[in-house]
Image (cartoon, rainbow, N blue to C red; front, side, top):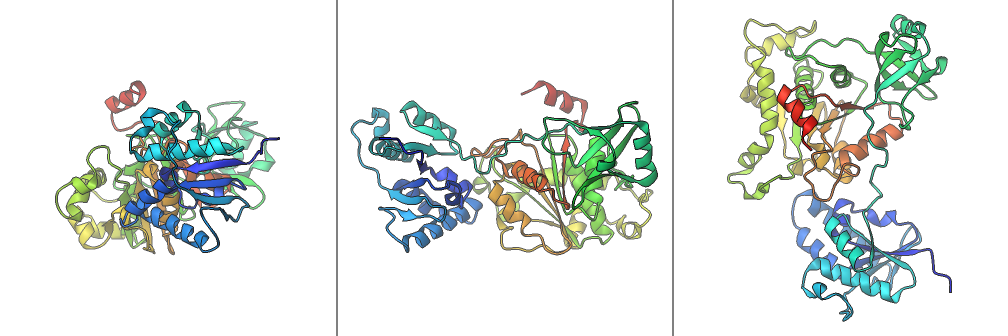
Length: 462
């Protein structure tokens, strides 16, 4: 008898909390939900964070499927597979270590029992590395949830070569050039061109132009970057910061992904740009939030009310704002030509003033869902700790005349169920890039400008 190519997938709770709509991702294979997973979801469903929301969303889906058939016997899914809820049946052949009443062990026993009774390959799907290891040790095939994992690593190589000095001259003369008109060479390891690049001549590597790569309907063009005036005397210190600064200040770019390790300036430049645009009335307010996945104690264990609990998490934001405000003194005037409104506020700018006038709003990320932001410059800091579903929830909050900036460092992920390839920051960036979005831009920063010691720490310490 030929073994079926279709598989049995046993889902762990971590997959559901990562992606509540994961049932649509397994094609025409069978999906098994261990009953203990429902118990875990039931305990999580009453909270107000994204995990609780995802638990409720998945439970609602199960209820819809329950109304169409018997979950024990299997309910037909939209993609042709079947969905089952499977209760654990004691298996005397299981390793003695699985005898403990631990939820993960119940999931493993469910998968082990299914494997022994089905001719199909049984696969445990989990975001929990330790659970996958335990599964493989007892002979169960285990996989990470790959549906929202990015397989094209972010490429920071942003140098494009053109055939001659003449092409560089054309860019400066016309401010842009159609890529189809010239021969270009770029990193062949990347499937797509970067959003910003140094365009250099093959004849003379010192002959360069800093360009934004613009997606047209049927082609791409290299557009010469214009020099942006400094905001609060904070100017880009390297060419990649210039790329980010350009993306932050442009009206036609509505979504910016600023990705880089600590000290590259992504948050400081974002806040300086946002504050300048708000005070010159391009936007009514700047909204700042950041993921508070803890490195140490959880938010609930900190003393005080909500604002007091949030204070430690938002301290990096306030540090950057204080640095910006410290750059302003009574004898200094803004550099921009159209900054009359900045002059009006120049001697009053303090954190308390900005909050009291509603120019700056600091929001807990838990309460973003359900809101709509109009006329806002929205900064999401530490976005590498968000799932793709959470990032989608945030981006879809954007109303009219709103710009969203997402900053983060994929090498510093505190969420135990995310990695450098499946976090929401990287996943969303590459999805927009793959679909050639005209309103989104990604800038990869790889040079620390915070201090000499910070740069060497980034280089030497792993």
